[in-house]
Image 1 (cartoon, rainbow, N blue to C red):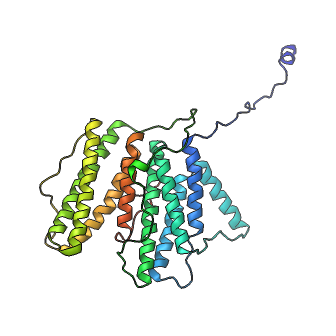
Image 2 (image 1 turned 135 degrees about the vertical axis):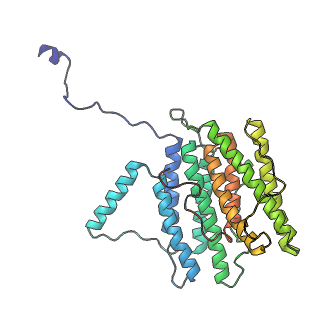
Length: 328
């Protein structure tokens, strides 16, 4: 007993109090991204008298934003949210509902979410960069799609280029925040990066060839549009090949001819294939952004968002998290 007294007060069975570490760059961005997702969800209500296609798109957007919440929350945050919802339901409190706001304001919130995702993706850990880039890609596609549907409901063309600010090019995606020294972000395995870099090259070369075929079968503005897309995909493929050479990764070479399958002479089938290729490219570049080292991510992020912009008025549906399933 004298020995214990000399040691001061002793608490049996109680751990010593611990101060949680300050948040790192991943948590800082994740917190802000969750707020941006909540802001978009809160503005995604369906206005009275909305055209059926617009109402359906808004319903899908709300569901997608819920998936974005789930992807960005930690396990503890997800449990706390579920507990709060259960308590509210038990107390008979009505669940929060999104409010229909001005369409331009909703698109603005989606664009703001896209821009924050782009900023985050070039700084955060690879395991988080992939879902964050996916959230931004879907927000890009959704903003453009809504603008296109609203234009069609007003009597315009459903494929006209909507008035949504274009995503930033790769050279403008640079780190904007100071990374806390106590919790540096991490990157994935080199072999995963090389695999996705190889796949992205192959996909871009195929897309370039496909649009060249479409151009050869088209006239007028349709031909010019197809040639523009051919050049866009060629440029991406060549840039990725240059990165592959610099990083000692596989360099994919374009094939002279690719197998399309089905009726190659069917122009409508070619157009549908171009749409499916676009959706696939979004997923490929999202996955590449998650696998790439920090200095290479901007190229993948910019490509994913540029492709999502083109896909907006053309691709009728897009996975809420392109390239991954919740839980991966």
